[in-house]
Amino acid sequence: MRDAPPSQLRSPLGRAIGLGSAKGGVEHWVVQRVTAVALVPLALWFVAAMIQLTGADFDAMQNWVGRPLPAIGLVLLLIATFYHAAIGLQVVIEDYVHGELARFGLVIFSRLACIAFAVAGIVGVLTLALGAAD
Amino acid sequence: MSPPLTPLEGRSKSLAALLPRCHIRQGCDASLIPLHRISPSRPASSSRVAASRLHETKPQAMPADETGRAQKGAWMKSVERPLSPHLQIYRWQLTSVMSILHRAAGLALTAGAVLLVWWLVAAASGPEAYAGVQNFLGSWVGVALLLGWSAALFYHLCNGIRHLTWDTGHALDLRSTYIGGWVVVIAAAILTAAAWAAGIAHWVY
Image (cartoon, rainbow over all chains, first blue to last red; front, side, top):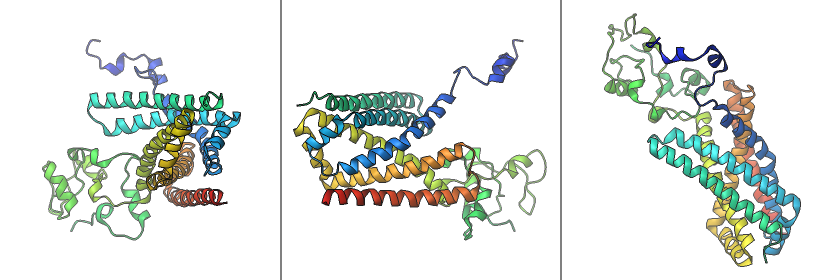
């Protein structure tokens, strides 16, 4: 038994379920698709809104974000965009960065940056929507 | 005489005739595959550049007869394996270019999303900060960035729908990937042009 290759140490149930020691791996793939589907209408809505806002001054922009639906749309757009971006960036980094430390560091950095930018954007939208700006 | 190295250097007009012989995993950067991992499928007697490149990195390890084909035996399987072409000698094609552009557009869109956050935070900070962003976006650099951002967005959006279609198991054959590819390219170009036409019209009138 001591000489058995590692694959034989796995239980039949473990082999059938197909999960490794990470107990997962498919979530990234699924979430990437889910956020992609969400981003199709959100991105089209965003482009249409930006066209409407072309040449708009500060007051017009503030009024637009101050309405509930645009504010909701922008928050959802920011969440879906940066979630999707974080996963996509991770895949790109893992494909092209080969040094283990550099890869790990870049994945962590990109993930933190995505969270930071998403939070910043959401705070910006909420500030405008809740009328805290002068 | 050994047959021509069609997938690598062929100048056939029909892409479809070339493609089935050289499958590269989508998103796989061939330049990242160490050359010694690629089994030579052509003999050393071939004067073709590609074959000689491969043999430089891996000396002929199997016996070959006068026709250049490796003798049957234990080596046969690795010899007959399709050759993975190096990017430098690989012919550009719509599908691989679109795959590369999808990633590039995704990276560009991340930068665009940062621009959106800057715009929103500036607007939340007050009229002065907002005016600063608007001045930048109205400059030539800003307009160029917005143009690139919108083109990347429409391309990534359309090609993303193509990817989602593939994920359902549809349109995976060679013909469909090319038809879908051209549909995406044309749709992205039309949508980008239409968005800018609408934006300019809204701005002027």
